[in-house]
Image (cartoon, rainbow over all chains, first blue to last red):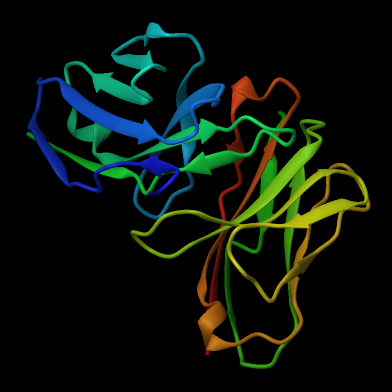
Length: 112
Length: 113
């Protein structure tokens, strides 16, 4: 079992719809959770982080965390073609070095 | 402006050459990382450092080496480049309070011919 699991996609949604991206992790002691966006040929950029159960909203983005189910999600409301990218889930593990593990990423395509 | 810089952006080099990929950050971050990523594939951690004179190998076996003599500088060296080293190399850094996540450089796309 991978430490961080994501469906690689592609996930296709029409413009204006809600895109829902999901991620599960194996280390029950994980502390912090991140979502990065990576455009094709570019570096990942941090768009959200969450460390408490529940929802965290920032503009059109909402991160949701359920530690009991070991599940993190990212919702993108009013999806735009410019949101088309690969979204990487990253989990900061428990342990002395607090290692961060990245998922494979989900490719999102927003269709105009 | 605080940032993280990688040079060169693109490099085409012949087999057997020694190369050094540069990475510098102006954010005063203690932790720095090197990742390797092939197109459309996941990130693989190849080296990391939690401070000056501290370096560790990552999850992916790599023939490269790193050094951390200054906080802001984390170069990666390949003693003898091979075509199998062709990839994108990404440098990242993070500060204390890692809830802030990583800041990535623009990357170096290396092609070994």
